[in-house]
Length: 166
Image 1 (tube, one colour):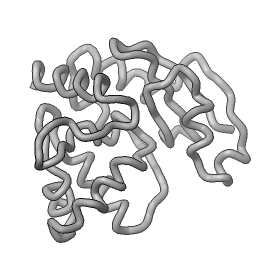
Image 2 (cartoon, one colour):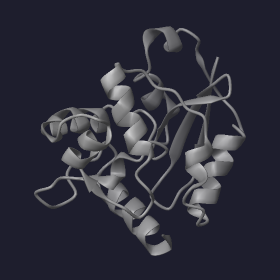
Image 3 (tube, helix red, strand yellow):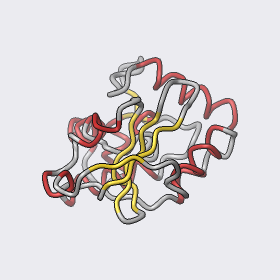
Image 4 (cartoon, helix red, strand yellow):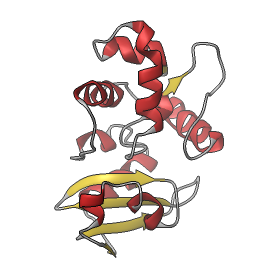
């Protein structure tokens, strides 16, 4: 069974989904079903139930919101993807709070050529575990905020929160 908890945040509800103690999805939505439908059919076959406390992932969110910007880094998580995508997701988790980099920089940090910026952007767009995998820290080299699955105001809030405390 996939367990879900929804936590309040200053930018709206954050749904967390966990399977056997490993975070498999997180996103700024009041409805965990929105995250559940993005999971693989194999995970969806396990079903979804709500819980009052997911433990470590929920506490990490509360700690992050209270100012411990590294709290999300210690949560065990898993999401699907090719070896290239896994390298990009790992590189994303290594971008420190309060720091922003470009998609080309992310590609380079993942051991890919800077011309793989599109692949980096695709990895961010398909990220199932925001903000634990902090795709909000990646900005276009042309300026601005670029896109964010949960909207630019959420991305702006996360960046402002981190820069104020980093």
